[in-house]
Length: 384
Image 1 (cartoon, rainbow, N blue to C red):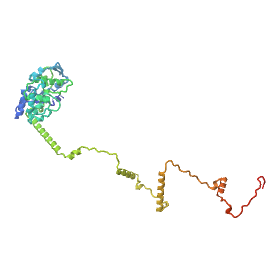
Image 2 (spheres, helix red, strand yellow; image 1 turned 180 degrees about the vertical axis):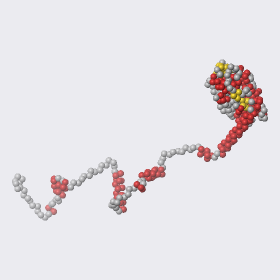
Image 3 (tube, rainbow, N blue to C red; image 1 turned 180 degrees about the horizontal axis):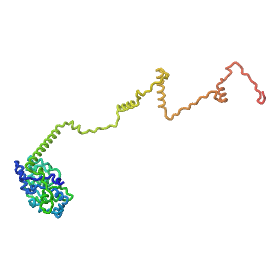
Image 4 (cartoon, rainbow, N blue to C red; image 1 turned 90 degrees about the vertical axis):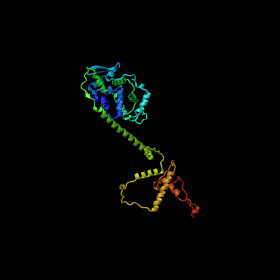
C-alpha cells in the first residue's frame, strides 16, 4: 500500500498557520519560509499512489541521479531538477558537520522551555511548544528517520539549528542525498517524500501516473491540527511530570522494611543433625511401624499358661543376661560339642561289662569279717 510510504509524513499549509493567534508558532513557520523550505514543505498536497509504488520498486542510483521506471517509462531525477522544482537554496553549507558550534550552543538555550541549555541526548519535551512541532517537521519531512520522534539526536538538532538561527544551507543537496539513500539497496533510510516525488513525476509528460488522491487532512499542518498538537503535547507533558513526581514521592516514603523484604536473604544450610531432629525421626519411624487398631488380630479362645509376675521378672532377667553374654562373647569362640548320652541297653556287651566292673565296690579285709576262701582251680587242659 502506498499509504505506508507517508504514514508519518506531514504537510504544511502556510496560509492557514500564519493566521494563528500564537506568536511563537507564527514565528517558527516564518523561520521555515526564511530558510527556503516553503516550496518543499508547502507544495501541492497530491499523491499518485500507483506511480509512487512503481517508483520505489524500480528506483536506483546511477551516476549521481535517481533512475526509476514508472508506467513502463524510464525517468531520471537529477539534483538540479530537484532544486528547481521546489525552489530550494543551493548555498554553501551542505554538510551538517560544518554547522557552527556556537550556533548549536545558542539554539540549545533559544528552544529551551526552562531557559537552561537542553541536553542533546534528551527528549523534545525540554523545548518550547513551537520548537517541539519544528522537531517533528524535521524528523518526519526533512531527515525522514525511522524510530522515536520524541528523542533528540545531533543530526535532528543541527537541522533545527539551521532553521532557528537562519543558517544559510544547501537544502537542495541535503534533501536530494536523503532521496538517494531511500532508493539505495541495503540502506536503512526510511521511505518518504511521497508528496514531493508525486510532484516530480508529474513534470514528466510521458509518464502515466494514474489516479491521484488528496493527502489526508489530518496530516496537513493547519490552524486546526496545530492547536490539536498543542493540546496533546500539553496533556502528555503534564502526565509525564505528574508520573515522575509520584514516582519520586513513593521512592522517598518507602520504608526500610520494604526494601529489606524486597531483597531476598540467603539462608545458610547446616549439615549437623540436632538431637531433637533425630528423636523426631525415631518417633516417626515407630509411628509408621505401628499396627492400626483395626488390623490387630482377635485373641483365640485357647488358654495359654499364665505365670506370676515374679516368674515373669525372672524370665526377663535371665533373657537379658543371656543376650548380654552372647553380645560380649568373642566371634571366634566355638561352642562345645554336645554329646548325646547313650542308654545302657544301647551299649555293646563288652562296654556294659566294663561299666559294671567300674561301678562294683572294691572289697577289702577290713570291710568284712569273713575269710576269703581259696578256690582250687583245675588245670586248663582238664575238663571239669
